[in-house]
Length: 98
Image (cartoon, rainbow, N blue to C red; front, side):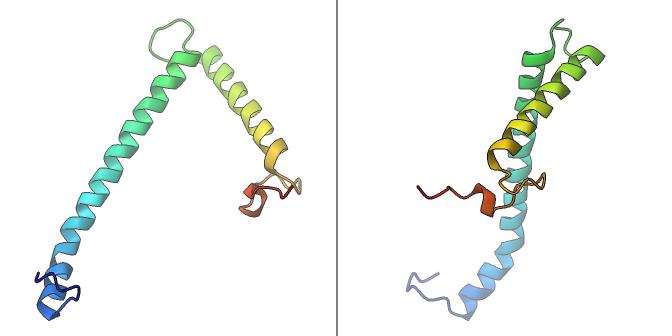
């Protein structure tokens, strides 16, 4: 790497050879972030819905969670589903001009 702002053939070959390791590292970072997020989401669900604090959701707690999620979905659709088709397209997420 001669820092001339251009990749010569040797630099191109080195970059190509290092790409699999870089991609593997990126995948590992993404997987770790996903695991951290999933664990945090599970923690938040338990904090909100595990009313008997036993570390798991029983049927009543699961129903409360499902009802809450359904209500949030209805609110989201009411706000953003401008054409009423039950889906939100990228166009519907664009801000409405004032």
